[in-house]
Image (cartoon, rainbow, N blue to C red; front, side):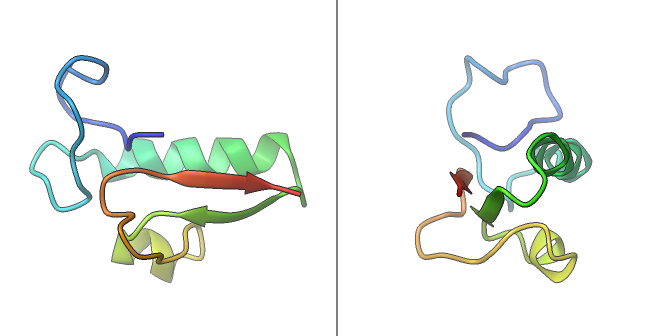
Length: 74
C-alpha cells in the first residue's frame, strides 16, 4: 500500500517515499492506526521506514520499504 499524500494525486502520481515533500505523515499515521484498530491483535508488523512512525511503535523498519507499507495479519 502506498503512503498517503498531501496532494490530490494519491492514485495517479505514482509512488512517493516518507521523505517526499508530498508525503502526508499524519494521514499515514491515521491509516495505520485504523488498520490496527479494526483487527486488534491480528496486525503485526506494518513495514514502513518512516522513523517518526517507527518511534511511535506504529511501523517497523524493513529494507526497501521507504515508498510503501506492508501489512501482515496473523
